Length: 128
Length: 164
Image (cartoon, rainbow over all chains, first blue to last red; front, side):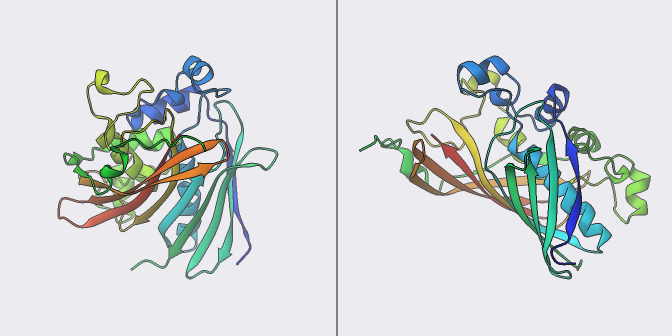
């Protein structure tokens, strides 16, 4: 199973999802909802997709894979390497780097051209 | 030589620790977070579905600890937020003007579920100035412990903020 791709999904976060995520996490950081501020003050071309939202997608992917394999996700380490912006299509994917039973997953959020926005390693093990 | 972003007080913040007021996790908190992420599993919304899977109540998506962290940091009067909307909280003073999320590592000891009361203790474990591609940056490392109503560890996290 090592090296096997993990079936991922695509997502295009827009204003409604970004509002909902900032509201659900009570995050008032303006880069995540204020387009004028992003452009005029922080020189971003658009509203920034929160890093933890990308991390949460990766955790959803890891969790679904782990449950199918009879494992539980023990840890994740992720890094936001390039900002992603509202309205862009994102591919959430991964592959099994090692195992199971002690599994190591390589995960990413990428643009359609393959450039990575967020990269992660997750570990999953048998429960108990 | 490029000017440093550190000011006289920056490094003295290493070791600072804050314990947030306990956070009671409601079913609605979990449902909102799950909907915002796009998680559709009924175990996040439906108590009966959660119990059928062996959980005592609805369980949160794994990423939910971030909602506990951000709410613990940002539940302050709006006029106490910085101009960028970020809570000054445990951000050390510096000459930097931008804050970005850096690496994060989380270890999950068990699922967070409705009815849990989570206490988050955040400590600054290190502050380091580095030279980035576009100038100096300050890496602030945090160590976060999420414990439940019984004092048991639920999530352990290390997290970095990049100031530049």
